[in-house]
Image (spheres, rainbow, N blue to C red):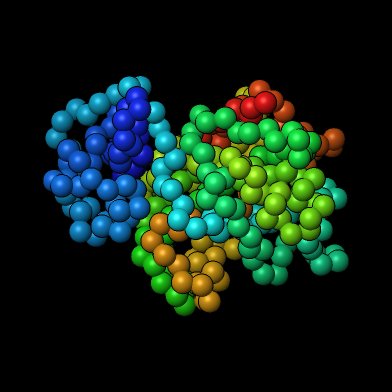
Length: 293
């Protein structure tokens, strides 16, 4: 199943079930008696309500509503760097990686950083250019994990039981800030640097071993890989993070990007005003955003 946060005109946003074609929706309030919560509430109530989600009507057209950020982060998004082998190699060669040990390409341990909740913007929202602080804007197509059942000290064997769903995220990056500050937080966390969505697919919809992940810029295919190429897979990331940090329902983990980002080209292909970035993950859908002024 797929779920989105929608808004009709200037009314209050609501959670809806999305059909497989991505063309029609059913407000959950019409399916689940008394449900008036947001996506976070749905995640928390999932075990109680999931068997009640069985729409009988034809639903409504998505063209009549706007698609909002599917899930508002209550704390920073957990992010992972250099988590595809080919991307780790292209980053190492780019001259922008000041975090690696000498001679290291793929990291020995997961490289973890974070993005603030204020980075998250919706499908078709404009990515702020931030030209006053960066001249090297880049894109990163990524799978985002949505934690359903919280916990601490979660083992790899049990990790996927804690995943509620998956969505698409663009880990937009100011490469010059990432390089200059060595720590990645500033370069990754400028306001609006986290397009996410368009909706969340429940965990059973996505094949972590082979689902395609692709990214186009202005129609040019730049990134073309699959989720099975992760250096540290989803269970390993959950085990690593939860070893000393209690994961909570609704937490978001961005799992890293494949090869083909802007700095992987010679010369680099940085994003400019008017560029359109489209990211698609098999089993979820497509996230598309234009770069603003």
